[in-house]
Image (cartoon, rainbow, N blue to C red; front, side):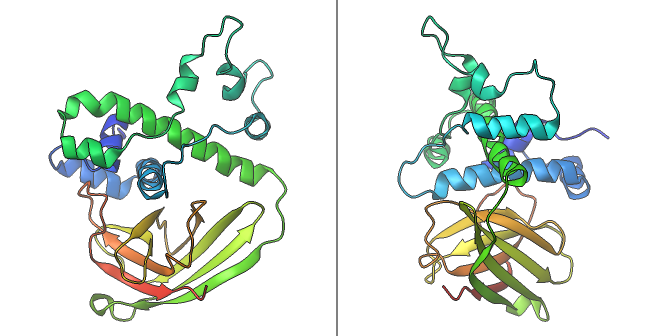
Length: 258
């Protein structure tokens, strides 16, 4: 089975997907691997767009990459990316270190509407590098000892009119240095993907946490997000149309008791 091209997935993630392709849509519906890759890229794009201020993505420390090295059982001769990206004695910087950089302002790029072909490679490279950093942090969280989780907030998720009978729940936990929200949903299967969002009470601001795999999953809440400002948990049904915006078709929704 031939998987989706990485450049195509990057374009879908930023909403610059080429014309609708029935074969591509069908493949994404059936291939969990491609959906996971698209999920990682779209989470990266969402974090870049929703982060308060102009914060830049930071490369993980040597300890993070060392933990990944041990977890994957890599040979001693394979150097972690942090070491490989270190400046040389002549003051030059490895190309890999330049790849780990803040994702550019995608909204501005879309407004300017430069030709699609001219942005394919840079966007794919930036998204892939950012996804690598995010993946490294998640692996580190799995490999390192963690403190007992503390419950921060919870919510019951109620069905929207078009999804009568659907139910769900959300539980926010704080452990080690991160907050996660565990989502569970019981609803009839739809034609698209389920996406998890945090909304403001006035629904004039939203943050995507990623796609729900199956009926339950866990998502990391971006650092700097104040749940008092984004207390509403929303699960939407999203068509495979390459548009990163909320579809407007919410399945369940509830307010965290922050």
